[in-house]
Amino acid sequence: MTLGLAVSALALAACSEKKSETPETAQTAPTEAAAPAANTSAAAPAAAGKPAPDNVDTVSGAKFADFTGDAAKGEKEFAVCKTCHAVEAGVNKIGPSLNKLVGRAAGTVAGYSYSPANKNSGITWSQEKLFQYLENPQRVVPGTKMAFAGIPDAQKRADVIAYLASQ
Image (cartoon, rainbow, N blue to C red; front, side, top):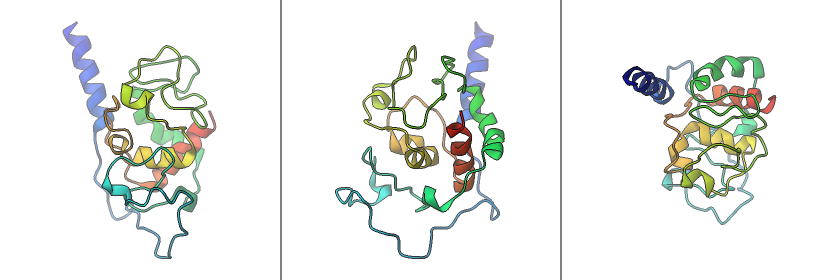
């Protein structure tokens, strides 16, 4: 039993390890003025706390539409996620199956015990919302059970989302 707990602790630590950005992976915010958000009720800056379910602003200012995801590269990046998630339907691990994630309401995979924060978030997982969430999951869903610091590199997030969208 002790061995099982140790393995689980190491798996969670691997999921939550945050890599530092290098100049090659750092993303900069677009320099052109962004178009006004479709939802004007979300006037607060993205970093001011939990964003609304329909708000997709990132802390870095990066926008999903500015990136083209590569599913093959995303599959390689997803290797870290496999510790806790599967992409096969009905296969829940420490985290829920991510099969057919894009377009699904948060907290709805059968047989998985979600945190109340995730289950009651009101989020539908669009590619744009996933882009925001994967930057910093605890910011988007405070109280989530997902012990993962996020993917700071916007291109890598777009690649992982392309991979997930293909499942």
